[in-house]
Length: 329
Image (cartoon, rainbow, N blue to C red; front, side, top):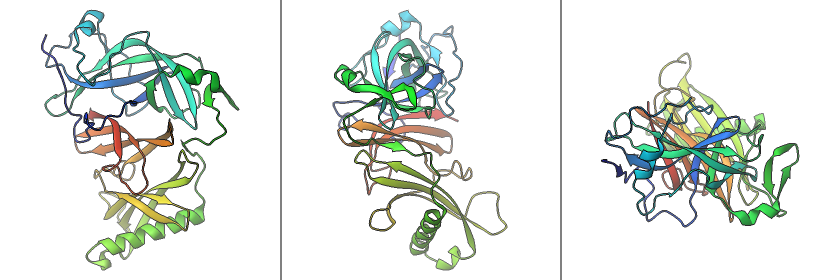
């Protein structure tokens, strides 16, 4: 069998030097009580069994399609240094946001086979069943996964209003993404702040006149309890609603001490407002004061789903990347 563990994950790469002792992976909701996770990138080099059973696509949009890995083939997969050694029956913790944690048990090894492994990697992972039957109810569908920590079991209790999920209770706040709409006056201030930044960065300020901004703002909470905004904005000339915008920008913003920009994200694709900038999907508490952000990025020819550790003042290219999944368009 010819199979090599891939050394990279496309343009967004987790290197061995970056990998901390505690690992995290991106997970997605598969169905009502299962999640799917891909642990490592591989190159099957045409050896993946043709008869492997195709599984239904996950209910979470933007996640990889998968095929079941036959037991005999799975047993032959090399398990090199730095790769996750997993098998059916292993337990992991699912971090869902706002401190909610559910234990999951791996059930079925799965693989994702890239159309062209020279450009984009394939992956190996597993489906996992959530121990609490309704734990995924009301969740966003994008999660972080870590190895199971049994020491936290005694400190869990059902979250008020969501008995299916669990929350660690230590008298502290947890990182999370808010569903509450941002006040209109704050959105207006953010639009003005970003327009001012645009005018300061383009060579011809006249290019920014008569442009109408379209804005989307999300509020999220860091593990230390402080609030942040993530804003996506594009500017189009009046009467030109179609095609690529004149300018676009994503921005991480702090409200403390007056609204101010911490870092900006560049445009990643020409595909319109919902796809042209990184999209914040969930915010989770990684423990020890760390905040994880799950973000999707649309780019020409491929999409990326990743888990980063958020840091004020950094954009995604500078934040620590725990894992990225590269998907063929």
